Amino acid sequence: MNRYETVFILNPVLSDDQIKETVKKYEEFLVSKGAKMIAKEDWGLKKLAYAIQHKKSGFYHLFDYEAPGETIEPLELAFRRDERMMRYLTVRLDKHAAAWADKRRSRIQEKA
Image 1: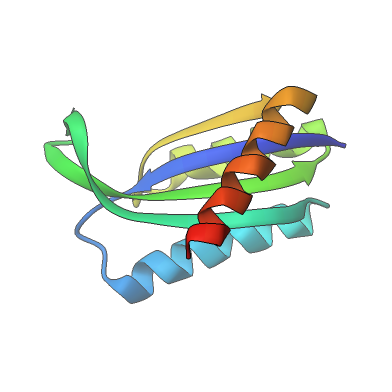
Image 2: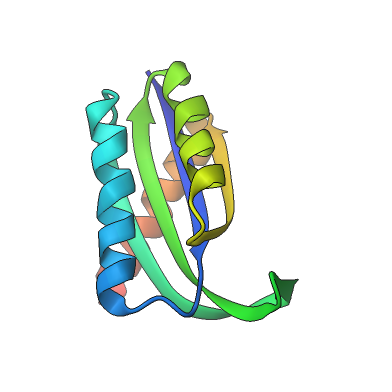
C-alpha cells in the first residue's frame, strides 16, 4: 500500500452541512476501497490565488491515507463528476515526504 495526500477545494457557496456531508462521502469512499485514513484536516475557507469557476474563495480539505494504487483513479473520477468540487490534487508520498507530513502534523498538534 502506498501513502497519499489529497487536497481538494469545495465550492464556497456550500453550507456547513453540505461540506461535512461531502467530506464524509469521500472518506467513506476511500475506506470502502481499502484505504486506511491517517489524518484529515479542515483548512477552512481560503482566498484563491486566481478565480476558479468565477469564485474567489473555497473550502480546503486534506486527506492523508494509505491505499492501494488502484484506488486513486476511481476517487479522482468521482471528484471530476461532483459539482461541489472545484479542484483537487493527489500526490503519492515517498518515505521522506511521509516523515515530513508526520512531523508537520505533530507540530500543529503541539501548538493546539
